[in-house]
Length: 360
Image 1: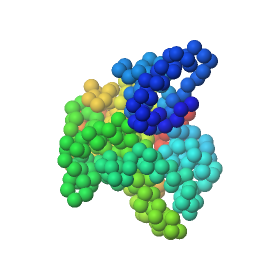
Image 2: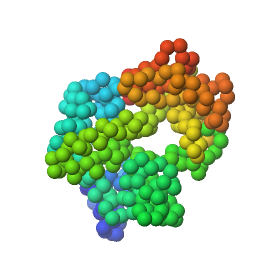
Image 3: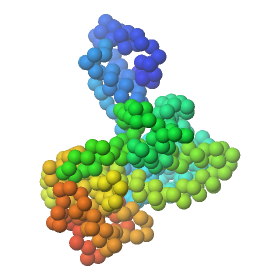
Image 4: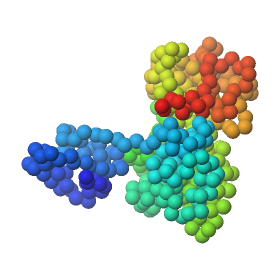
């Protein structure tokens, strides 16, 4: 087993050729299993491209984090709390293992922020130090996205410091971060193409949480003031979670659909205009990013003490005709942490339990 292969490729230009020679002449005819490991997915996939020496000699296996049902099983939490746990840990086994069964979110954060060496704090720091030196522009762009900036112009302004980063500089940086699957770019889903209206986000929820809260909190925690770091988290937790849970919900619905009601729904996304007014959380369609047909529109309300109510339904109904491909007969759906109000003409609604079951 050879670990840190992307680093080897970067440091030694002859590594791939030597690996091919050793494999072809010596190891391939022997009872040997050779495992090459690396966290930079773009580099690992490039090793198998046609023009590279090791092409055709390996099979690819991506080791994914634990999924939502796994996290619930390991933490012993109810469905809604398990969603919180996944958003905080990202499903990374070492971090999930430190979440003792039945421990509440606040108890876990208290335990983690009282120990500067806790997995929750250390994993993010080690990841960024290994991938991005602090002085790199890629790191600045990543931190801008992690702080909540979503559009090209606001990321450029935030990452540039004194002046905004030029488009010719920012575009390749964002492309690199996307190729490494650290940053994801979402497009509005409808029957009308809108390729320039991208919204960027940190692809991994743990790194998103770490950049939003823990990076600035580590100096406080190291001098024994984890209470201040936790206060910052609690102050912004509801707003941060409301946005962070959206990709998880869309991915979970993709595991539930197609079904008998929507047999052709194979894409779940959102829709927005350039002013984000309106912004529709859920769009179900036959394909993405340009739909042939929109099957439903929906709203996400992930609040602990307020269900999806008539006010939320009316807001969704007012926004529905803004998305291309919809009409007054387009079904409306909802995903809510605290349930939905009575007598709402929703075509379907889902809660935390259904989201967890989607991963079983």
